Length: 394
Image 1: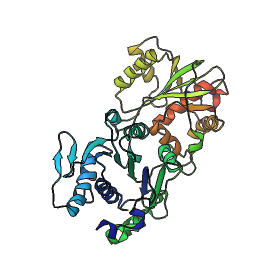
Image 2 (image 1 turned 135 degrees about the horizontal axis):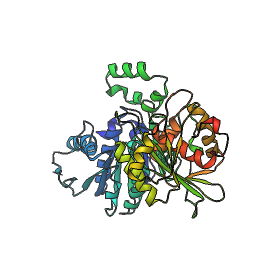
Image 3 (image 1 turned 60 degrees about the vertical axis):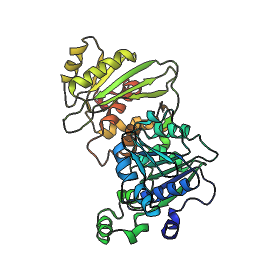
């Protein structure tokens, strides 16, 4: 049945493939394509399989039990039953293929297991997509032709750009309207009215992988990844505390500068914290990571930030900064450091880099907390000796 109804862009590459990346808009039929392809490969003898969704709940709900999921497709092909072992997170087909479920953000669970086939759904949503991908590649080690299927709506994360350009990856692109015959006419009309000719529509409906937000200060080519120097001249921790309790994050970023003037982003510990929690986190990192000083933005909190930190450590060195000009005036010089190749990220910081690639200071009066912390930290290392009036360093 699938061979007769599948569109050409739902069929695997004709050549022998290793990784098949299906990058398409909402409603394209990515889940059905992934499930049916897995069934075809099981018929060819693949037996050690992993399904990886954003969370373990989504793996079961979408990839296994969804309307176009594996279970539905299996039952359309066979009168036999799947053996479902929900507690142990696996399915067993009548022919002996074992399918184990994983959550994308729990990538450490992939250490040890080995597979001949992996299906990943919505990779672009994963918090640690690059670390998950490393483990997947290390786990695909059974048989002569191990394979990986990736079905995802694109988002401008560096990993997707890497995969699109990799020689071992075959890429299929598709749009929502490719599957118009199987979608509600009302849905199509509604999304076209809402998102047609917009960047969100290009990404979510047309399946286009966008480089970055139009007008953003950072482009993917400006973000360099590599190892840190062995010796640092200075190392600072920058903090931008959340100003509300509605889900805002506190930015906590560690940056360093080596003796020859190269800068490094070493860690991003940002997250949702209470005031006590972020203070304790900062004090812990200050001592564990041999931080020279803490840089804190005080626009909203005034001296309260210093007071909170010194409740836990009265001797911690704190440099307070206050933005007296627009966000653009302080972010542009930091983006210039990246453009000159002076800053290296020592690992892939997905959330931080997403904010960098999608923040347009001319269009937004706010800036994300992770990005703010990064800017203040690098400003302290590279520009604090310059004219103080530009940002009003206190």
